[in-house]
Image 1 (cartoon, rainbow, N blue to C red):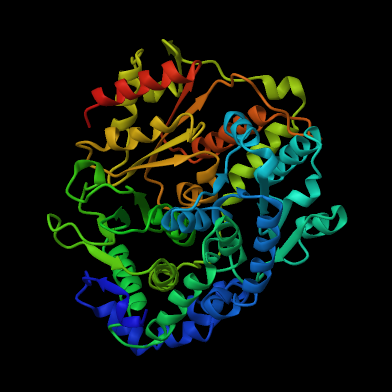
Image 2 (image 1 turned 90 degrees about the vertical axis):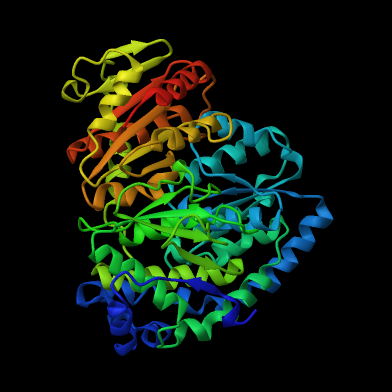
Length: 541
């Protein structure tokens, strides 16, 4: 494809003033040259080691021969079930790539023991596991790696030969892989941040092993590089970035992402992380609202308030005026959105390449896991129980509420002015998939957007915005009883204890910031989830 094939339809909310300024300042050309001064002196140090993504369509080419050689080996050995153990930037792009191509890739981005156990029991004899972590220390990924190695050992399989690693050079994971003799190690460009890594080894290796042609993605992206480097008003990345930044300046700081008539699947989930982690900090930022394949004219699209920007990935919905449209091949869209978000960061006045608040929930979770067993076991008591659902909240929030519908109603009434409601489900996103329906149910008639995230997956995505962005969120956390726990090999905790600590740590940080929070614990997942869904249907915003 050529640059002209990347279709964007962008309406400048300020009449193009910001776009004209960006053109005059030669921002696009400077970004193409990887100029780290674009985001100010405070961001320059970080930006200087985070701009490798600009050239990935070319610099990732040497990976292709290595990938092809490994694919041939795996085919010969009958290893055709690819599992990706990764979080955030290490999992979201390959999931989109595989789904769009229609190939199977099992993405294990959870510490829920039910989800982990299901993955371990699926075609183990034909499984190759891609362990993907930029830092090499991601606790979720390390725990999944340990679980697979034990499962392979129990089945009499040489586990080291079933592990493929994607990580940064010199990371603890790279050193471990060399020491233990894992099958293959792909060293990624260390000058590319996780959420900008779609066209690096992190995005390409898992999807390619599953059956996607990675060269095609790079070709699509490289074809639009000249258009994205041009200092001109018709530069689609510059125009989209200017529109997002200008809208933020005018108080429209929420971005509803809907997937229109397009063969691309799940792109909004990838864009959600890119936008939230890049812009949600210093009390500012753009809140992405992933509404998936919903159409823009439906209430569940998050079509609420005058502070929402509506963006269609693919063909637009003619019933909604003023929406922004981005349409093109997947490789081109990856590069377009990375460019636009980097540009928007300049307009908003933040560093798009750091994530200063992500560690807060991680530290709180580690403290719970490291606490003496007695202290770790001590938990707050529910305010009340309604059937299979225990309700935890501050008495000030609940007031006299003593039923599940009333508790949900109390939380929706506590959403701040021009705020949002976030549903955070620390559950099994396969077995408890219906939890995702809560977003649409709670968004009906609401005067604010409603987001949804699977925990702990969202901690590597919108979790940054929740803690570093504008303090106008209210949070519904859902946890579930564990039917059959699973040990994390060679660690003093189980997967059930790990996900519980991650949920508790995240909730503690949100509470410490004064956010309205409601936690619902399902003592029986199936029955409790049905209760919550029924209660959500009765909520009136």
